[in-house]
Every structure is written in C-alpha cells, then in structure tokens.
Length: 487
Image 1 (tube, one colour):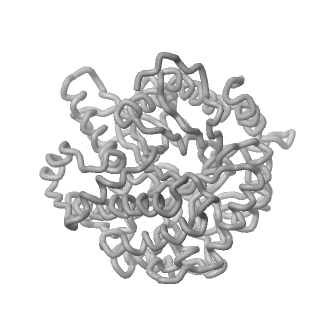
Image 2: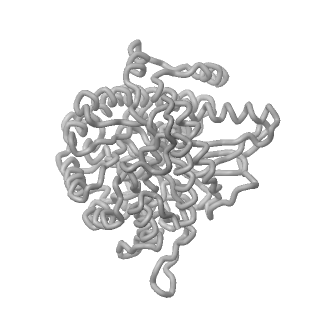
C-alpha cells in the first residue's frame, strides 16, 4: 500500500543484534546425550579458498564417527558457548543488542533424529539460555536447522532424500514450539536453504562422485522435502503459538550482468531466478513456472505427494530473512568461476574491493538486494547475517583495533538506512558472528567476524577468554542511537 510519508531512518522497534550457529559456537559436542550432526563430520579445510562441504562420502563419515577427538573437526569444539553462555549473554547485554540469532542443535534434543522422546537435557539447556536472554531483554531469533542434521539420518536413509525425514523434523519442531512457547517470538526454518544445491552440508545427502545432473536430481528432491517440512512447521507454529512468527532464510546471491550484452543480462536473470526460486516457494507458496525449463534441461523430476502443493500454498512464511556478504557478476560465456565466497560463484567485479578471503565487498549491493526482495515479495525483511571475516591481531597495547570491521559494518548499515528511506520494510539486522566462532566454510578460527575476540587458535589452543574489540564500543553506540550515529 502506498504511504504518503517517507521514513527518515530506522524504526523504533528495529531489532539490532548478532548471529551465531550452534555447530560453530556451542562446542560440547558429546555433552549431556548430544548426538553427532552433519557439521561434525566435515574435516577442516587445508586451504582458505577450499570449502570441503559437498564432497563427502560414507567412508568419510565412518572415519569421522570413529574419531572421538575434535582435532580434525573444529566445529565439534566451537568456542564453548555451552558452558559460557552466561558470560556471552552478559557481554551481549552490555553491547545493548535487541536480538540474538542462535540455532537449536537438533541432535541435542533428538540425538539420532528419529527418536520419539526428546532428550530432556538438551531441552533444559535452551531453557536456561532463553531465560537468561529474557532477563536481559534480548529477543531470541531461533533457527531450527542451521547445517546440523543428525548424521544418523544420513547413514540410515541418506538424510533429506528420504521423505520420512519430514516427520522426524516436524516432531522436533512441534516439540520445541510447545516447549518454548512464549519464550521465542521469531523462528527461522532452514538456514540458507538454497545452498542445498551445493550438496551434503545442508541436506545431509551423500552424492559425491555422481554426474552433476544426477546430483541435482537428488538435491532438489531433498530440498522439496525441506519445503514441505518448512510449511508444516509454519502450520504447527501458527496453531501452537499464534503470537509467534516464522520466516524463511536465503543466502542472497545478488549478481550483475557482466556487460550490457543481452546474453549476459539473460544469464544473470537465470542466476537470479535460481537463487530466488527458494523464496518463491516459501513466501509465495508455489513452484514458479520458470523452473520447469531448468528442471527439464537437467532431467530433474520432483516426486511430490498428492497433498504437497496444497500444504505449500496454505502455509507461506511470515517474513523473509537472508544473509548478505557479497555480490558477483554473471556472463553467458563464463568459464571457471573466479569468485568463491559464501558459496556464491561468479566473475569478479573490477569496481569492488575484496576481503582477505576473496569475498567482494559491495555495500550498495545490499540496498539493491533489499529493494529487489521488497518489490518481489512485499513481506517484512530481516538481515540475519552480514559481516566481515578478517584476521584480527592483538596490538602492542593489548587491544584489537579492527577499524576495517567498523568501516565494513558502517557502510552496510548506511545502505540499510537508505533502503528503509526507499520504502523497504526491514525488521532488523543481526550481524554475523557477534562473538568469534569457528568458520563455517573452512573450520578455522583465524577468520574472525565478532566484535568480541575469543582466545583460541586454529588448532584449538587458547584460554577461550573473551575480549572486546574496538568494534564493540562502535556497535554499542550505533545500537544506542538506533543507527543515527555511525561515525
């Protein structure tokens, strides 16, 4: 609906905050009955440009399960939020955040995924976390599945490829919706669901070594089951806790045409459609027609139950959340991708600088993304991941002077404000890795995102002590002034 008045800045109820994921942050991978997740069988990468996420075999999983250490699997140790949550939440309270995005480890609550009775110790842990957050006035934003499905479901049924996983997941969602009713208002279903097209890490499906089109068949079938499970979860939440809201979560892979050549423009349009297909299904409630041609080209046939389309249509999400780190360019004649970051692939943009990991920095692209998503969907938007992975060093004075992170965050927040003035309905912003954690893509600690430093190196050595960086005080002031003071 057209509004005759133009907003001038962030709304009073804007959700300033930070984000983490259980598999990178909690640690305590065998504590209190927890089972092993898919994230905990992926070995650390040998190179910073290497993401060992999709090329996982059953033999790799067997080796990982037999290994009772965290030496080769740093996500198992995280940074010990499990035992330090009170200290970390006190720091977040001091920072002044309004919202903290965290995920539930499915395997803390249903260790194998297919049990009928939950693990009370896992439920009780999150009770303590949510109660402490309530004490501090911090709103939980809870992801139900953040790259951490039970590995048991992969070994026994190839993860989400089996339709039976829908019922197991929705037993989990019903359990937590009932348990945390009144404690959690904002839920997300599958983190960066579109990255399931890259393989194992998101769906738990083992397809290493298969021809590409066969991999796509398995991946899109598994993703269909996640679409259905997400819709059922939405229905469950609306019935169990009508005051709560649930959203989808997309890894936004904004791309530009490499040139004005119509062939490049059309190639960029297709790349955009393949990214937004996921939110088209979850927000609009139906498969878009443009995917018919892509499916036919690659021989993909989605096996749907008779009721699936009706379930999707009747239960769209309430809001759209997304991650934004970088943009790429697309050409009709692309060879091997030049840019790899957050699983976004494409050519390099000569007008943009890049991080130490080669991720191109494009604050204006965030404004473009916000406007495009708002125009397409007309539902509230929520930026639940954005941040700079960098090597932080302790200076001679004992402090961490991360001006580069301040500059990055400022530039992106400025563009968020511009998008709000443009008319975009933006709910909040939870910067990624508010407290240093283990990197998702490479499992290293050296790639730090937080405004709080954690004393741990790539090998797991260190005290785990927390220390505020310069960016802590800067972000604290931004939040206190509701985004009006960015210098």
